[in-house]
Structure formats: structure tokens, C-alpha cells
Length: 143
Image (cartoon, rainbow, N blue to C red; front, top):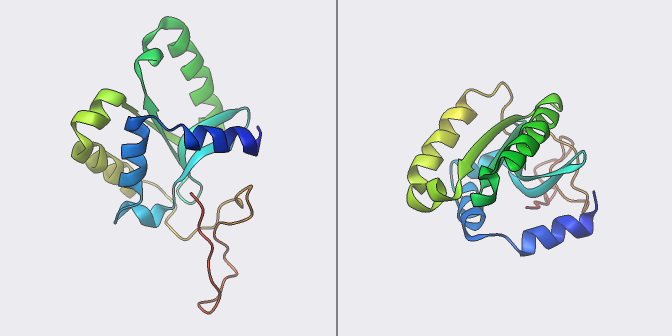
């Protein structure tokens, strides 16, 4: 998967995804360091935290067809085989009940075996967090 494609997807974020992105950047969710449009094998996850091995998907109306649901099952199985838990929210849920989405996220994150601060793979752009950073070093953060 290309970095160029990920950048394009980030720039064209649908309104529901933008709301989730803004939610993920607030406390206490910001400590989990979610990134947008993360390549995982042949797929892009809407949001992923390598530290807690969680993917968040925001599904629009196009995910309701039989073909789309079959594709999503294959995609989700691949992501789970990579060790990630997958949480799905509908656009409607995000737009009408963002507080409930946040509560569900926090509950799911409380159940994860890893905690914030665990190093994940580096960002393709070269930023991200590292276990070797000292307090004197500036820690780069990417989306």
C-alpha cells in the first residue's frame, strides 16, 4: 500500500470519520495514539493504534450490501490475524451519538492487554514514538 494513497484518504475524510478523528485526539483517548488510514497488509484501517492493537472502522451506507459485508468479513479476518481487535461504528451512530461511541471505545480499550506507551511500528513518514526516547528528546507525533 502506498503512502501516497494513505495521504489522499486522509485528505478526503468523510464527516463521520472526521468526528471520530477529533474524538480520538481528546483526553483520555489521545493517550492511545491512534493514526488515520493505516496500511495493514493490502488494506487501510480507518484508525489504528499499534500500542493497543486496535482498529476502528467507520462504516457508511455502502457497507450494507451483501458484497460489501463479505469483503468486510475477509478484511476484518486479515486485520485480526495481524493481532488487532476491530471495532466498527456506523456513520449514523457517529453522527447521532458520539458520546456513546466514545464510551464504547473506552470500555473496549480498558479490556486491551497492552497499554499506551508500548512502541508500535514506525510511521511510514518517519515519525511516531520510540521506546528509546528520553524526556529531553522531542517525541514526534503523527496522525
